[in-house]
Image (tube, rainbow, N blue to C red; front, side, top):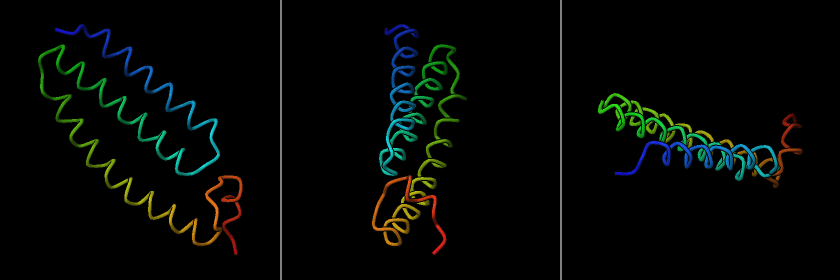
Length: 100
């Protein structure tokens, strides 16, 4: 059986990679993927603690978070496509000028 610490360390590493990717990159797609990585690392933490305390409430919560993440991905990708169609670039620095 894998100890809880290993799952928490892995989740912390994934969350850190997501934060670094979000802060450092200027591409909207990369920032979006970093947000999803952070969200999945939190889901890993929920599942690890749920397994540790032998209660399914954390896993049920992860299911709802994944449903919300799927809806967020659909809306986020629609915004990214609209941004690309208007600006022909996915650079965040150019996205602040949304007025035509």
